[in-house]
Amino acid sequence: MKIEITERVMFYDTDCGGVVSNIAYLRFVEKARSALFEAMGMDLASMTEAGLFPAVVRTEVDYLFPARLGDEVRVEATLDTVEKVRVGCRFSLAVGEGEARRNAATALQTIVLVQLPSGRPKRIPPEWFSLVK
Image (cartoon, rainbow, N blue to C red):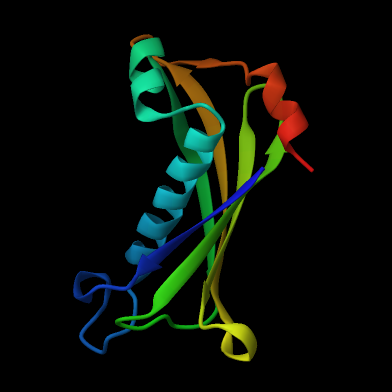
């Protein structure tokens, strides 16, 4: 499964030189991950009702090219791997269009589903295995 969102770089996303701060990339990734999980049936209301939430246990980010103030950042989120109790998501963050398109960053996340209030991990829903290409 794959989704794409677009985020505009705002002043608060940048340092004094107008370059996107590393923490802003994580916010872009989190918004894309939330949209991906919503597309997989885990919207905020259903998570709250079931008490079942995705918890990020690992994030890796490679910064490749500086996004700048005012840029549109396209974030592609892909469900990359599905295992018994965890999933892997891959993210590609790009700026520019056509020939001028540049990869600004890539990221990988490992997520487990946690049942609250116990905080115990739960098995990944069987239907998610068919969402990986």
